[in-house]
Image (cartoon, rainbow, N blue to C red; front, side, top):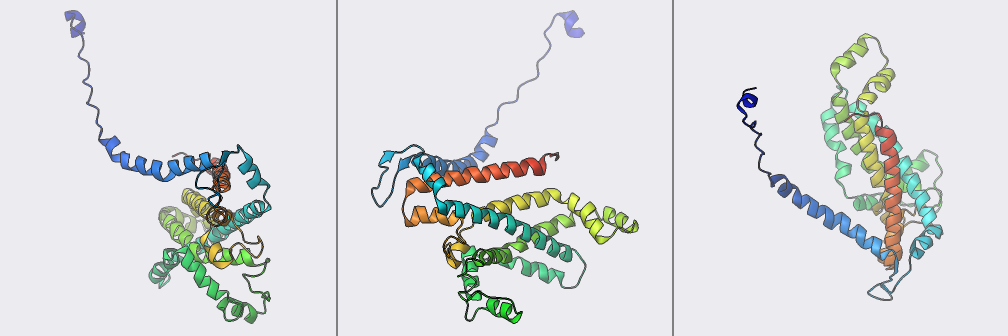
Length: 306
């Protein structure tokens, strides 16, 4: 009112000088992201439209359009690899989640020795996957392996050519090695989630005489659903790229029984040196994984508020 009567213009708030510090701090991350992810993907996208085999020439020999993509999609090996990878990812993630949740529930109890159990539980996840592959290669040995001996002792059938040499058991054997290594990862993450459940709610449910199953399904799981959804997504993505155990244990065999997309990509790029086909397969895998993850995120987080 004073300014209107006096005819003087109101004072405008001073603009704070723009700080470049946030941009400087995130610059290294952006550079690494571009160098490690964006550039390789763009490089692969460009080469996927060319005929380029390093056994024939050190440079692309000609533009072939979508021929590499058509050749990959028409390949029987690719179809088998995709089927095995989806089976391995879905079944492996489900088994590891259920077992990990069971272990986490045991860890959350006040039984003696749980501290030592938690310390031992982290050990498998610290071992490199390729080392786990060599370990299970000896455990699966048809003559002196521990696992065939246990199965025979339990009067369960063991294929004459060994668990890794049979088309019926090769993929399941690779899956078992992965379950042994990564189930503790689920257990540790879900155990941390269970610790965040408010004890007041648990005590109230006990006073209402809720059964352990009802307490798990109606109270604990809903309260840790975000943690569970994220860890499920991470493990699915890791399992979709399974390579090391397949290389060491079965090399994708026998036939295509345990071949995965990761192993097929290795074979095309580093054994046959066909850069064009390997690049096309890379982008097909990228599209499939992103489509599956997008669907999962849509259905898993559609009612979430962050």
